View 1 (spheres, rainbow, N blue to C red):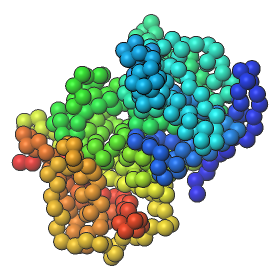
View 2 (view 1 turned 135 degrees about the vertical axis):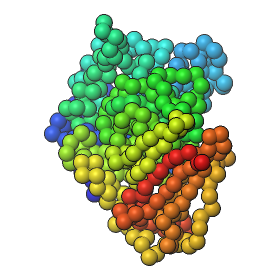
View 3 (view 1 turned 60 degrees about the horizontal axis):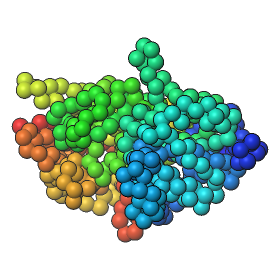
View 4 (view 1 turned 45 degrees about the horizontal axis):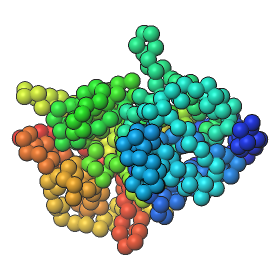
Amino acid sequence: MMGEFIVLLTSTNSFGATEAATNPNQGSSLVLIGGKLGIGEHAQKIYKKIVELAGGKEGKIGVITSARTPYDWDCEKKGDSTDGGCNDPKAGNSKTVANNYIELLNKYGIHAEWIPVDLANVEIADNEKWAHRIAKGEFSGFFFGGGKQYQYIESFYRENDEGESTDSVVLEAIRDQFTSAGTMIAGTSAGAAVQSLDDMIIGGSSDRAIVEGAQKDYQSDSSVLTYIEEGGFGFFNYGIVDSHFSERGREGRAIRLASDTGNDMVFGLDETTALVVTDAHKPQAMMEIIGKSGVQILDLSQAITEEDDQGLWAIENVQGTYLTEGDRYIPQTDKVIFHSNKENISNKEDLSGNLILSKDIFSSAKRVKNEFINTACHLVDTFKLDMAYGYTRTSVPQYEVVFSKSEHTQAHFVNEDGKRKISYTGLQIDLHYAY
């Protein structure tokens, strides 16, 4: 199994809370979740992993919910009632969401406290007392909730005299702890996407993205592919991170963003699924998948892009990998390790004949989900079939996605609840205009 660390030593700080002692000789870790964490069996596994990597009962997690509507603004709009107001546990503002995370983290055996930075209180990110508490090791981990990832940027970054983005003192303290003290950072949905080093994705639909390309900075039209060139917090430096990935068909937008910005790798996180990175930023870094579905790793390092006379973009030779629970990936060597409980699918394929063409390959209709990954998984599970196709729902212009097996394609499976859960690597993906 993957190398892990557990924080063991504690002391008591002047605030009367438990101060977690971290070990600078142990690598920091990341738990990046694709959203819709919930409270079920798979969520339990993920929360337990978060707690374990943050030191268990001896640790403490700082909960950050800057991506949500600020509590103060919600109170001004709705009043402070506990029934329909800003103090309603279901209100979904920065404070109520933080309280929900804290309750769950406490349930799984770790102290947690809200760090109340949000758009109404950005000055807290410049507060030296908070920065000091973080810098002296009171927190062994940090959890970033979901919402709108650009709000994290607005809350934690400052502009210097040269117009460059710089860390607030609180973000600087978190960064120092992550770099030197074996700290755990978790994030779900927006809280995962903001951990990207370069070119943090903001939004956009795949169908529109592959036609129009990427635009810098926030746009009011959520269907436009937009990104922040300076990136997110940079705690995950292995590629672009996107969430709700297979369910919402975000493969197209992520591939186009990576292509437009010169990024080689995309890590697409499915819902209720976590990518766990131990010894982050070290040569021995290891990634493991836990949770309900999987993580798509899209490699553009050997991809070829072109535009035709009409300016229509195309890309060939994107290498696709899909890993599910228990599978591991070594970024240093680009090595996939399928879990030992999974069988090689070769000569054990469950399907035969041609596959039904998807006419909404990026799941743009609300009732449609997982079309891209289902097509890929069906292909690797089909005997004597080497290619599969899918088409965008939009017809002007309409794009075709081609999935191709090669001598490098490997697939494994495990039976779960009467269905095959499939992992694969080395599947070629091409996107081009359907002439």
